[in-house]
Length: 258
Image 1: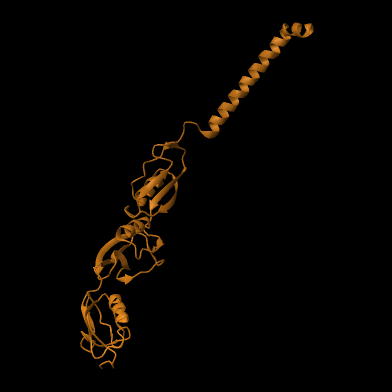
Image 2: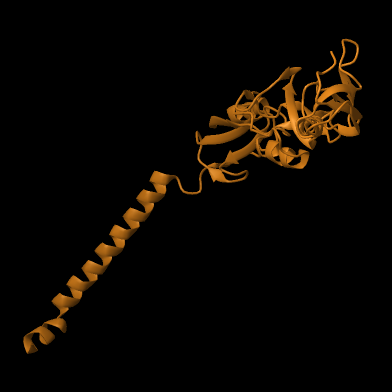
């Protein structure tokens, strides 16, 4: 230990220590300047602002300044086709010559989407679903149907479309909705030969009412009596009546009138 401490005080140790320090410093300087030369630190040029330009304008600027470029595309309904919406690196970023600039532009062709199942939905429900699919609503018409504001039909360019059919994203479709009133007229049922219970059931199912009920002849059992006449009567000239029309019935245990 004493010998080592004595060595540290000798001129030989001091000379070797100085040489080692200078060697390390020189090595660090060589590495620093080599990297600076290799990377060309401080050299380069700023990236031009391309976002918002047309793709033709952006390419013209990049070519003039010696940049390379790659183009990707996305579809957005409310943006002008061919417009640059993103760039990488950002504008004014200092980069080296021949650097590749990545551009994202709006494509001119809309991708297809499967038409969603909006039938029997309300108008508000269908509008929300169609918006998520990027489909717009154009003309809206109403037709007689018991379902109010329910989607009955959808058409694109004059042709009806069904669930799952492929149409371009951003398409404008037309809708047909029910008015909640239903048809103003219904078919008049033929009640001849039916019992009163059967006739009442049929009339209610047709949205018609039972009018005056009369019995004719000797009635031995009212439950088995059958309709022999009805008014209005079904004929070649009368087969539809308004909703709620009362139908008068004449029942008998005899033979129905033709």
